[in-house]
Image (tube, rainbow, N blue to C red; front, top):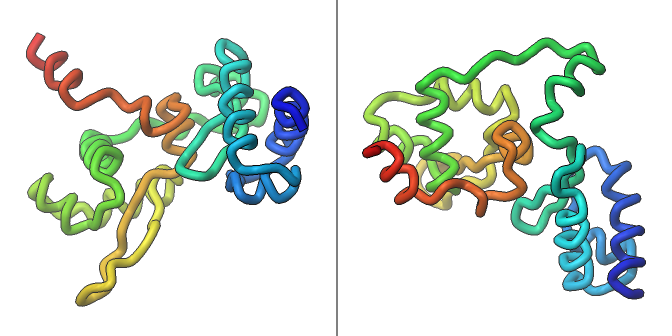
Length: 174
């Protein structure tokens, strides 16, 4: 199977999938190597630049989503209410989590200097954060990471698109 054929088949699968799919699952379904799936997904993502759909990546998972700049139209069509803005505490916690993930609540609290249990609970309820693991240590604390919804909410195709910390620090100084 060549790249173009893989893209066509991949596009049809991603279009009907209601959740992120691993590249291993896609390779199995398409009966090709994972490297071809990854290459086809990247190429498909490039094809959607400037369009109403996006192909998002998180680790080994891939998902087709509507472009974040189209959210208001999609919400209006679906009859969804605007979910509101995130509080400063939620944004601060989310920023720490996004850049430090995977991370424990204790690590986030050490950086913020305040209890963030309620903020984490709200971020999980909004689907922006999820428990990704538990540490094999005393108490088995939960380890948190961002979700595909996080990427969608902030209009990112993947975590590599997060602004570099040096860039953010320079912007604050200017």
